[in-house]
Structures are given as C-alpha cells and as structure tokens.
Image 1 (spheres, rainbow, N blue to C red):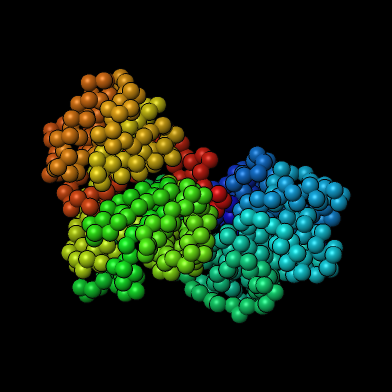
Image 2: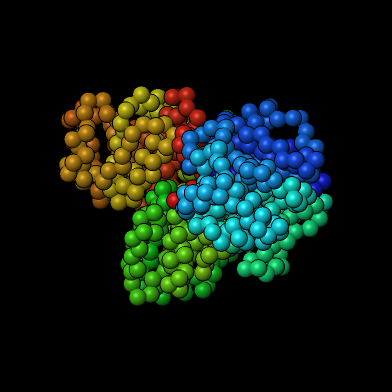
Length: 591
C-alpha cells in the first residue's frame, strides 16, 4: 500500500526513481509523483495514473543528485493530481512523501491554519511537510525540525523528504511503516522494501521504529531518541526478489505455477537429513504453551484456520482471530499462551498494533512471514521465513501455500513425525499434475464468468478452503461469492440459491462425503449449477474436477491450486486486470 523510493549521489536519479516506482507497483496505487532539487529549487511532477504516465510527462533526465518518488493509494482525499505525493511546504523549501496515516492530522492542520499556513490538498501528508517548515523556522536545524515534528504526530508513518536547506541530503523518519536504506558505492538509496534497490545493491539497513536521519552520496546517519546509532547491515537474496514475468502473461499465473518450487524450498530449508531445522527454543515454546493463538488478516487468516487444526492434533487448545478485531478487542487466553502471526509482508498495520499489545504483556510471539527484516519479524520472539520469493500479484497464491506448508512442517516437527517430507514431496508432484490440467479449470471458468453470485461449500479442511477460494474469486473477478460450511446451508444461505447460481463444492474427507453430496442435492433441487471438486478416493462420475489423493490435512494444498486457477481464468475471461484488482493493495500498511 503506497511506495517510497529515494536516492542521493552518483546515480541516474530519474531512471532509479521511475524504475523503482515500477518495482513497487505491486503494492497498489492510483497516482505517482517525483521531486528533485535543481539549482537549490524543488521540482515536482505528480499525476493520477500509472508510473509510465509519470515517466512520459517528466524530462528525459533529472539534472540532480537527489530525488524522491511515491506511488499513492488514496486514503485521505480522492485520487487527484493535487492529492498525489510529493507535497511541498508553503515556503517551497521542503518536499515530502509519506506512507501511513496520521491520526491527529486535523488538529495539527487547524493549528497550522491559525498560524497562517494554507493547504491545497485533502491529505494528512501536507500537514507533515508544513509542520516541518514551522519546526525548522524555530530551530534552523533540519534534524531538530524532524524531532519536533514527530513529537506531534500520532499514528504510523514512513517519510522521506528533500530540502533546499541541505540540497545534497535525503532525510527520513519512520514509525510503524516499512522503510529501509540501500547502501551503494558513491550513492545511497531509500525505499519501502528492497525490490527497487536490489539491482543496485545487496547491502541494506533495516530501520527500526522512531528512527530518523539522512543519507548522502558517501555517508549516512541514523538517530533514535537523540542518539546516533551504529548501522547494522544485512544482505538480501536477489533471487528471492526477482521481479520478472519469465514469459508468463501475468504474475498471478506465474506465482501459481511457482507453488511446487516454493513447497520444495520450504522442505529443503526446514528438513535436512532426517532432521527438522527449526529453532529448538521455538519447539520448546510450542510444547510449553497451553494455548496457541493465531492472529492474521485475509488470506493469512484462512491459512491460520488450517494451521490451528494442525496444532489441535498435538493436543493444543487453539484460537484464530482476525487482527483488525483483536487489535481493538484483545483476548488473552490461557496461562501460558504462544501467539502466532502470519503476514506475507511483515508490515501489516493491524498485526503491528496487535504485536505492540502482546509485547507490552511480555508474551511470546512467533511471526511467520515472507519478508526478512520486516517490522513484525523484528518485533517477534521467534520467526520463520516462508521463502516464497517476491509475490507481485495482489491476490496472494504462493504465499498462502507457503504458509500452509510451513505450518504443516512446524506441527509435524513438534510431533517428531518425519513422514511429512515424503508427503510434501508427493504434493509437489501432484501440484505439477494439476498445472498440466489447468485448461480443464479454464473451461469451468468460462461457464461461471457471467455469474452475479457464486457459492463455495465444504466441511472441515474443505470449509477453510472454501473461504480462501471465495476470497480469491471476489478479489480479482468482482463476483460476489461466499464460502459456506455444508451443514450451514439450511440455516440461512440456501435462501440465496436460485436457478443458475454456480455452487462449487470441495469434497476430500470420506467421513463427510455423504453429507456433502446431500448438500449438493439440496442446491441442485433449487436450480443451482453444481461443480464438485473431489479427491480421488471420494470421486464419482460427473465430478467437475478430481485432484490426486493426499493425507487429509494437506488436501488444501491441492484444492487451492484449483481455486487459484479458477479465479485467475474467470478474471481473464472477463477482461479484468488480473494482477492489480481495483481498490486493493498488496501490503496493507494502514488500519
């Protein structure tokens, strides 16, 4: 959600900013802009629309050694040129880009207005840059102006700015929103994540909350609480941050077909030579916990529902909460709980709020994420990486499969059950078989593409799978859909079943097969068009799609392949933007 890039030093400023914003476009945006210094004057270009549009409307080269760029996903104010970033202070000496939400911006705006400041936009960001101008007027020192400014801000933010007062520096400050530095030779970089910088450097500095400072051509300085910090350098793996379609028409299709590789990579990282490779202290913490509490959002929440079943098999009490609910209505369960967060980006704002509460209570926290060095990982007591590689399509696919795989490995490690590696290797083979049959799924997609409503049914693991399948369909096809437990049909949802409504039913478990097929008869008798997705052991003639058998608890990994392909092909057949659906962002860094 929104993206920041910045650079200073011996580097092609326009090329880096424009390409960097393109590399961040998977986060979601509706407008884009850049600012740079030319002869100590700030130059700004910003427009609604694509980064490509921005590139065409700007000079071929920025004759500057410092610049910032931004892709905006509207929160305060509609998408417009005026509301786009960067924003400039009233006196024209500061230009700033910002991710996050300032909760008390109206109070600050009112105060500044009474002091004679004027505002062009509806954004909270313009408040920050004018507050910087006022703070600088009191101190005549940029760093002190930052300290005064952030002392008045409430909420989450990552900010980068340039100023004519210090024309060869790029300043920053952050709290509860991602920002990191890329260290180069003769230049330094700044961005929301590593992907825009990975072609220029593999050396990074992860910025902690409440850090501020500046970067220059050959130097950098980071402060916190008025004290300068010694930089801690990390390296990123370029292969896991590669943003390349590799001949695919869409990132979503590419990422679906990377699922077998991702599962294999997880097995390789967490199981070697007959031994699991998890932190022994984490395994001990799981054994000692009397309650495992999962907290997540969206797709990660659906993976958590499946993971909860895995730990129930270990005899653990488990609970699963939606992060945005738990954040405001926390429940502290058990005398010795272990909290588990799942987040693809590691920067999910709702989870960060939950994490702060858990940290204040001094309770152990396991973070499962795809992003090393992210805010949530740094907040955690224990962490496990998903090794899924960069996921560009907004609708998450391979990250979901990675979460389910990781949780299966971790739970089996706690049970000392090494057969999981063999079972997952079989899942890899079976996923590849489904990839070979994707055109069969496309034919089903063609039949449902014009539907107004679609229902997914299941029981047990298949019910959790139906929730994820429904989410994927609505995300990228804009078709209303619901995931419903088979037994709940008669308690309300069946009132919505009418002639021609597609109903997709997952059947994996022999124990509930008969009941599920009874549910199918119920919807068929009311005119629904049924598509049954079954496992081989419970298949019957007329089933729409049959996946290979697996142990029941891994069946979501195979059924999800069907669900992902179905959503992809329906979106494709409808002529929609598969990778960038409307109103959605990849990394949700605001509440």
